[in-house]
Length: 366
Image (cartoon, rainbow, N blue to C red; front, side):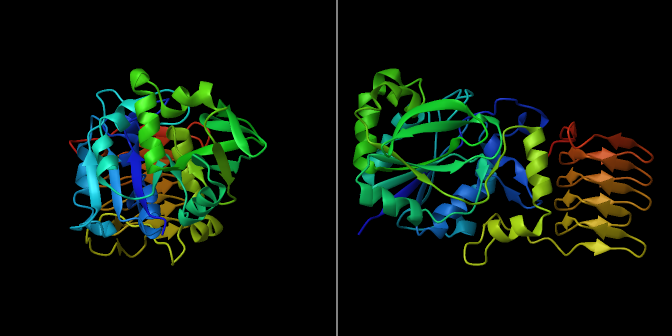
């Protein structure tokens, strides 16, 4: 029987760091009102029957630890297997392309050595999708490949995603940046555990490189295949992409594909009371999380927990994070308002869909 463990790397920064990732790692960025980006790869692993998952942590790990804790909300608070929060190197990686720093894997070799699983599913946390990894492991085993990448034909340009070049069914090269029609690497792959340990030993002297950087000169000797899928994927590498992904969550067909009943995306439970809508309030085409108090107008927006929209206030085309208050008469449009902000009465904050306004965290938060 083929068995697998999971490994999620979160020790990297985005190419264009901004207010959203100044005080938190990319994997801990809130999404869709109640989730964090790391919830998607972690839930995919658990829904695929993988019950041992290692998380390589960033140096600013506190928000990730606070969110994941013992893994109880994912069913990973177990005596056998479970969740393992593991240290990453001091600086991680901020380069383009894949996000699998050799140094991080080498310093956590014991996680791979102690387990007896046949395969390792390795993934980053910046691309949102819902996928059963058994559908990746099966063709990997059948082909006998050393590594099998999860890929997709991209319908747009993306400078932060790698594309792959294949010939005779094997990956022959990587390009950092993806153009329309390229086969994009979704920062996820499966590899036999023994092969991964062998590769780590082989490239130990260049541990400052990404695993795929180190292997580039040896692609003729290492059998790397690509498994192409057709499904919704949402990459998040900067505020503009984050805003676009958030607006896509207001489309029914995207939500139906991303959140099928048989493969739920799990997250930390907060047990807030239901949102209260006062007489005269209005909310349209929006996702409003528990614990909010709506007295004004909300449209085309996503509100996290405990957001207050006071009478006469208007929120349109926004992402409002936990604990914010939009005071009486304020107008906020096309903006990302990070947690614990108070938008004063009568204030107007306006961005555009192509130049979204971002307001950094207020108070202590996170």
